[in-house]
Length: 287
Image 1 (spheres, one colour):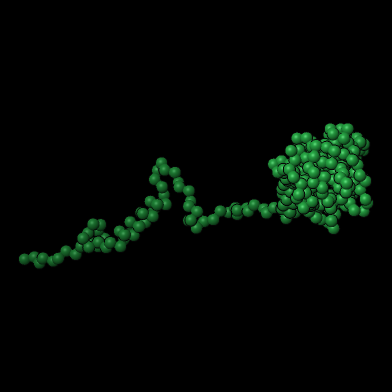
Image 2: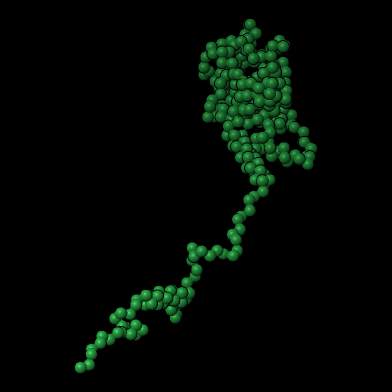
């Protein structure tokens, strides 16, 4: 009888039961790699991801830093603009600078003093006896100012005056001390040579003591909306006494720019101006 021998399977035959799987796995990996590297027909190739490890050939250009000189000029310009705006606002609503051209207020104010005027007086804050005020000359107390020669930089001075960085030196303003308020009865002088307000004599400690004041007799009642003013340098002041033919010598409240508050220049005269409340503390209210 023929012998039965077990058949040895062919190792190279595909699909055999004992076929090794390593080659199939390798073939599968290679096919997968090929499918990832080669896109299917009809599809666009996807752009390379920045994280794929490749870098652009062209380096990024950083914006250049501004020049230090430009930065410095910009800061200076900003500071100047802020200063001008603040000065204009202060000059318009709070304080204004004026120049003293005459000796009518010596020794309280000297010639060439620069003062700051509080624009909140007489409105919204009321005037008081003894306040030093600056007012516009609407009654012709001053002679007409000569026309100034226009120089090449006059517009610069005018501009700085307008914004408040320079004092007003137009010489069309006056500065005096308020003696009589609306309703006051002011008389010069009593038997002792003293000024009286509503029948009460006052000791005027602010009057220039270098000279004995000359007596100019007057008897006035201050109308509503006006004040009676006099200079501290009585013998050298063309004040209400000298202009009784114009508006009775009174100054309209509407013409008052404000109350002189501080001597700002020269620095050795820097001081707050006093209205001497003790001088007027016994003065009764006017009618």
